[in-house]
Length: 140
Image (tube, rainbow, N blue to C red; front, side, top):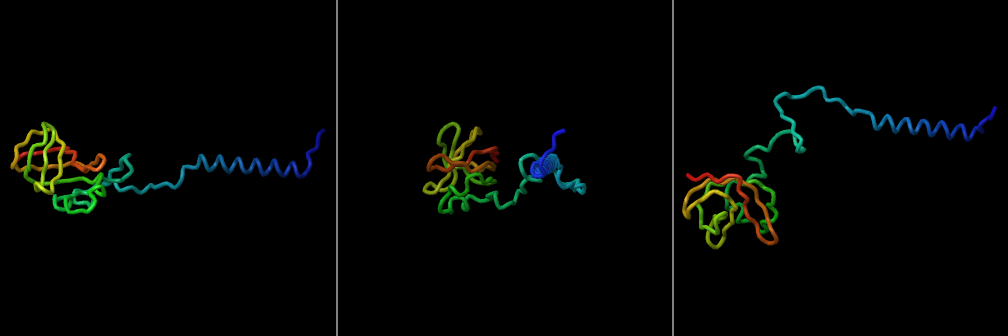
């Protein structure tokens, strides 16, 4: 019968213990959170609940957007504006704000210059330009 040296036997036990520890760590389900608040929806987008309407990441007045030094810092922010249409750029876009300090809006809703509208959407950018991609434009 073949006998293993004590060093080899020790290495075998260490290797077996290490592999067992790795397998247990990989299969361990982690801490259980059995106490859940039934009123808090859980999504798959990385947050537990949708962002509230008055969150810091939602702009509610155009002056906040036009008054910032670098509008690119607002990329990804939501907007919820009640404004008047300044002018039409093309069939799918118009601008809001003052003639010398305005923001383009990309939307599929036909509007008229001077018309009051509610705009919800997201601040987006392309190269140097920042604009609003409207989710909805509701004429009044």
